[in-house]
Length: 261
Image 1: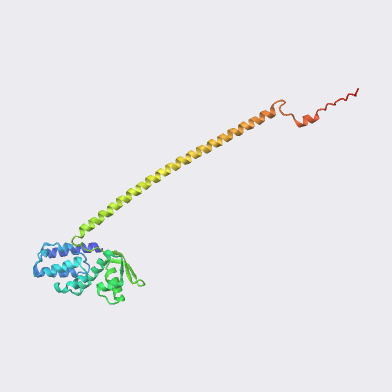
Image 2 (image 1 turned 120 degrees about the horizontal axis):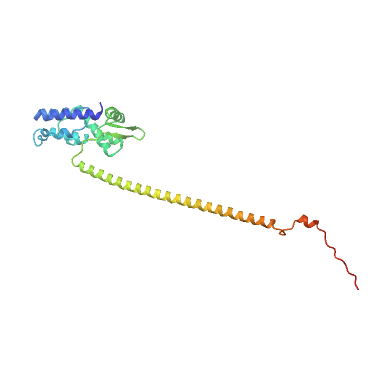
């Protein structure tokens, strides 16, 4: 069973539980849900009307705790521990896992020093064991531990529940991305059209050049034929050009001398 399917089943289970409980019993459901090792999304449970009724009552601390697991971090808990129920070990582990997801939302390279501070971890070995055993093996993150650079390179991180007001910002971000994509598509189409036009012009230029070459060849061939026929006519005409051997065979005339008177 994959993580998403398991999460969906757990969410459905706890939503039904929360819908059928009130008061302290409902508080116990919240503790159980936030301790569940395979559950990392809580917005559906937070939306149950019975839980919303905790607002302003003596049980409101359970509502605040559920909000913490939906949107908060380990540092948020430490800053507000006096107003929240004390966490059990499974909840501490879960909140630290969620803290890693929150950090991975905005930065895909997480320095060890920052992680150790946010998770209250005292040394690198403990931090790497936590990232490997409690984060990567559970499937909520994938990445590479870079001991040389002392950082965790995030390749994938599961998403957390949207914080109040975050949906509008996300819609705006997606809208901006869509506009940028549309503009890029238009630019690509224009470049393709320009390339097609240049290709057609190149083909026409090649055709014109080939036609001119053929015309030049025909013109040269015709001129050569004319010159050849002209020479043949000259040599074939009677009296046109006297054969040299014939000229040598003719007797030469003698000029008779006359005596002086």
